[in-house]
Length: 192
Image (cartoon, rainbow, N blue to C red; front, side):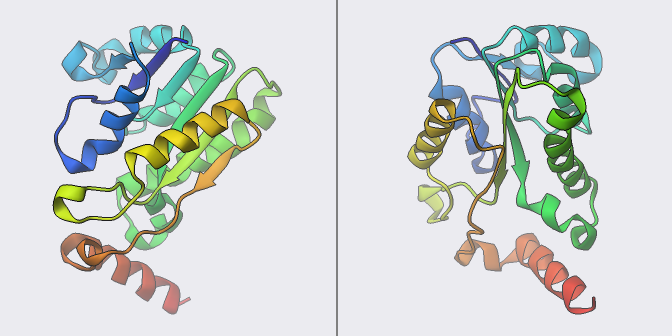
């Protein structure tokens, strides 16, 4: 099975663990990222061509609105597409930043594109991620093995189109910027 994914597969940054795990999950994954010579703003047509050659395309990297563009340009060309979303998209009105807005639009597009394109060529799974586990910092989240089990289950049973993962709120989540975002969400919905 040929697997092509956008995003980095070699980062040691905990916020990039998901991409690294996805890259390592499938032997021989073709990585489309700046480190491998693929820049969305310069090589977009080449990225689309390579993505369309996959048996599984993992639409992971969130750079501007290119995740949405790739969904539009690759859906219907590949048998399987995994699209990585974020819980922040569900709260984009409260968080009010470009990333959250894009993740919200991405989730909406994943729901609508099969209806609009009227094809079942592509098994599409939008995965709403909250947190990934980082054992070195005692941070809870989905583990590498849980992610692998989930994706393997979906590949064997492609009847799901959207999975929202549990909202992990450990000690690390109750500090700094993450706490500010949670409080903004709570305040926003309390005012409604």
